[in-house]
Amino acid sequence: MEKKNGSVVTEFILLGIPHTKGLETMLFVLFLPFYACTLLGNMSILMAILSSTRLHTPMYFFLGNLSVFDMSFSSVTCPKMLLYLMGLSPLISYENCVSQLFFFHFLGSIECFLYTVMAYDRFTAICYPLRYTILMSPRICGALAVGTWLLGCIHSSILTSLTFTLPYCGPNEVNHFFCDIPALLPLACADTSLAQRVSFTNVGLVSLLCFLLILLSYTRITISILHIHSTEGRRRAFSTCSAHLIAILCAYGPIITVYLQPTPNPMLGTVVQILMNLVGPMLNPLIYTLRNKEVKTALKIILHRTNHIPES
Image (cartoon, rainbow, N blue to C red; front, side, top):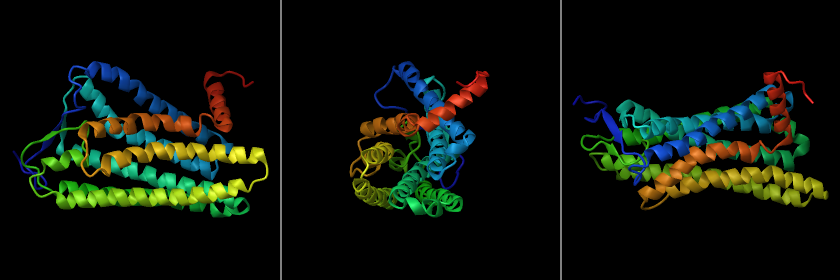
């Protein structure tokens, strides 16, 4: 076989979801609606934010970014998995495997950084309401958004280069439904200890730093909320922040389970990855915005315009 990028492996075989032989059709029927709902829900949120001037605020700007990343993150792995479940070829080229791993960690890390930025946004809104428009000006929001892209690119480039500078010259069966570090490293024909240590440290540091910043923000937010005299004011503040906290738990739980285990469990990792790729991106619109009156109003206006129904 032709040598490519220091490797004799030119394609990988994705073995899919462990212990599901004969259940492919049932899993396809189960997973397809999740993926469709992810795309539909996040696209609806994005359209509502873009179309309504009332939603052109920092909070909804970052929520719009999150919707874009949720759709993209889910699309990195789900289409290939669904095609495999339909009975099509489980082969993935070396180049596509590199791209899949890069974009998975690129978009996944951006989501972690976005949660941190959103925590800072809530912190400034609740703790410094009079200075909020200055602290979260359009220019600062744009810089924060670009910063998440750059940090995500650096993070993913390190992990991808470490994984694919290793030679792959023997087995090419990936015991997973997409190309990821824990599934690829056992196939390398060289010592993988450095790649394992650096990837463990990299993912761990990014997750831990973001989590600590979020925890610090919400500690300050909680203290400020407790000083609000109005019961209604406290209720609204807690309601706004609770959605963010729920989403953070849904995001960081899978990261800890999959990447920060001393001895990863392949079956547990696969189940958690499916939840992270399919369920998490689908739930974010529900957690964040579909229960929000302003977003519901914007969506109703879009539906009225689309169907030419006069607004009530």
